[in-house]
Image 1 (tube, rainbow, N blue to C red):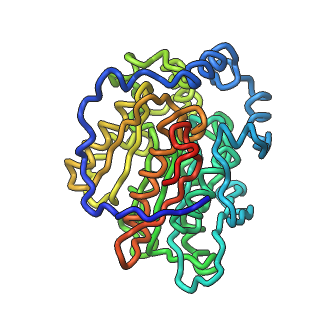
Image 2: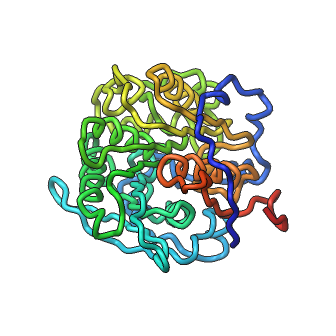
Length: 365
């Protein structure tokens, strides 16, 4: 697929963060049908999934065929992926390292550590294969995707501690990967977005390997689950308010949902957090979580770009093939990442058209 130049926007603001029109809550028809099917299964329902099914869902590899590429987006070409082991307290976890082709390249690349979603209960690095490879190719950057341990077998704080340990391991191995640990970004979707911003908050005082940019896709920022959107979109497809209560029960195991290490909205002081891009879905119980966190960051003086993506429900980044706006949202995400991690001398970023939406097919950018 071809690449094209987009001028980098250096003054990122919260201009898009106003109340969205009701029409943005109308989900794309294909996604509505898929959501109807999912709602009639127990595939992702934490309250009814037994331990055996949870373990199976974590072990299943993500097949790479036309169907999965259509749903998850195609993996980028000329990107290698290698699994490595990282020692953590009480065991070890896997990380997947994505590296773009190095032909003709002499400079070090930025680093991006990615955390997958799944309510801290399900999900795997395989689900983020396509997106991580596209980030690696587009910026270009070395991307490290973290397979942190999951609840209820490993409740809080284990997933967060694993994420912190994997980030520190990534910083220590930056030279080996041809990357620059001083250009470190974190990214994640849903529960992974929560882990990403908690890592960024924890590393604010680091002299080396401090996070300089965070990309948060429909993050969970308030596990009290008390926002208006939790009620307004409580029966939305792919993620319901009931699902969130189930994930919270398994992840916290009775611990305080106001703990700022699980609900970043309750961090007292957000000053010094890195420039941030936050994407939320139009019809998602977590929609207010992302917008409220964006406003808190902006109030603390952090540069924030917020976008509520029209026509989408929770999971649009993982299943971009279901949504017309997913490809455009991904391009915007890559643009903001590039603006802070790898701006070229002519202040442009090279962004691929990743996985064309139905509106983009057949059109030359």
